[in-house]
Length: 202
Image (cartoon, rainbow, N blue to C red):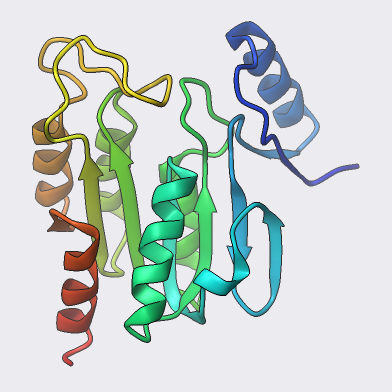
């Protein structure tokens, strides 16, 4: 059967998305999406919309909710001569097949991936769940960037999951959890380059 399926479409009704993901798990199929821009292993393969020219073969694994943010960070790394092993955009939610935690687990097991970048955003608790996994299971360096610092509470921004309710889903709560788990924290995409170079002793 099919081992891996990418759902690029956005706006799939939540109940339908849950049914698709549940059925796929029963059949042993991994789902990336819905609303995923896909993935790219520079110099090797691509499934989805990532522009090949923005990426460079190397050893940094990226997992992002946002496709556009994965493009931006990939391009900034490439311009700095820092290549990527694989770049995965999981989609904006609120329903996901592969999660940040699951992609990070794959990067931890991948010999070609030396550092991991987590690109998160406000809303939901996925980053906090990833942080808990990181603290117990990951020994590779991780750099995290959480976007949406100036977002007002209760206002939906872009992705379906990007909404802050009360004190949950804030940049502060995610940064605190990831920092406690041992992740480096970047405030901007360009800071990611500086941190990776610092990790590599450049």
